[in-house]
Length: 100
Image (cartoon, rainbow, N blue to C red):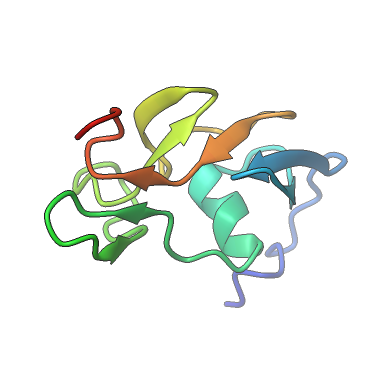
């Protein structure tokens, strides 16, 4: 399976979201993680202590590795959050709160 190609799906019209100000095309029904993967982005968070890159690990909302800030709300699990037209997605450092 190629994640860049829908598996026979007929999604609605594509729309635009942003990741750190960069326009990304998304499809209805995708999660934030799926939209980022489709755009070729595999890491969008860094760990608090060492700053190591993180993205999706489990894909079911259990591991919390895919935390991202969506519309100024930090700590959103990208693998569970449906992407919406106009969403402003930001990469997240550490806990997602200033000064942490």
